[in-house]
Image 1 (cartoon, one colour):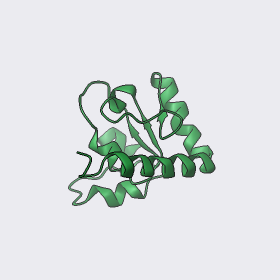
Image 2 (cartoon, one colour):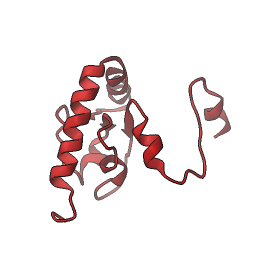
Image 3 (cartoon, helix red, strand yellow):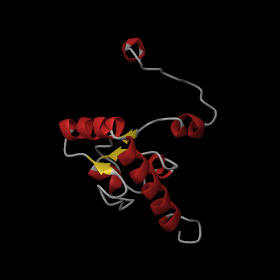
Image 4 (cartoon, one colour):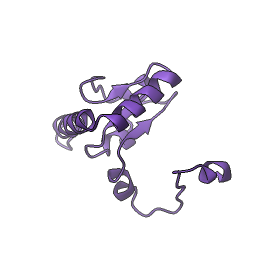
Length: 112
């Protein structure tokens, strides 16, 4: 973790009591999950933040890449999607809002 913390613009946090506050202040969130199962709560808790996720992270959620999230077809595609959100605030805002609506419509207590 020391090497990561030494990178310019990187802040490493520990013992965070409520991750939502930090997450909601981000310009883009990522879930580079390569193996797993079921809904990924970190994606559902995004609260309207533009998300870049792998197809594995999306398996239990069913978001539509390009509509609710940006998908990634490997490391290069993942990085390109993150940069795309960082450079295009209009795209970030639109997909973030659509992602929030998608979660609110599909992941309520009543539906599950």
